[in-house]
Image (cartoon, rainbow, N blue to C red; front, side, top):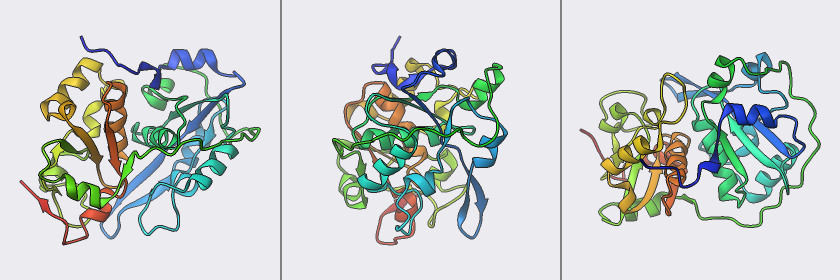
Length: 290
């Protein structure tokens, strides 16, 4: 059996429920909805309405695009500056001595994206709620409604910026490099270019392999698969023998693959932040289908 090398990055619902009300705990609902739109690929709809219908007691709502993305960039969900990220996290009450738990009411990729951002800005005391809101509510755990309760501000200080995000130049250099595994977290149909939403040209980055983020989750529970099964799926594409660069449509699903790899102990994982939103619309960047 394979175990998680870093089980502290995943928290189960029972443990979180026992800890609710601790002064140093900050729970963040990171839900965003992507509504398919043939003109723009997706419309981005923050999950605030869902949050107000029901959320984990004491949670704050994070609008990923408005609060934790670079809104001056032409692409959505791009990593913000250190100063902007620190200001947002301080508003959510995060600082020295706090622990953050992230969750989503849909797929866990929204929670893992915020977890990855925290890690990239040097903050390690964060965990993703295993099973998210689906598992929490299905088990009949406490629910709060309405807007978030006022939260005392924190003082988030960026003590380190880690090079966990890459751009197209690093991805381009990885093509043909046997020491790098470029890993697509989109669906098998999107990877092959045979279906699903596209971000420009259909298909994948040349030479990349596929472990869909959706296949890291048990559909019955919405929790991550056991570590030995996750390890098997990544071993099938040779991810543990190499440096890994994960990508998807816009750096969100890619964070779920990256998160799982880090929990399994992979020492060198980076995320292509702009992903196919940038790559697929630039005809100079090589793609393949089939």
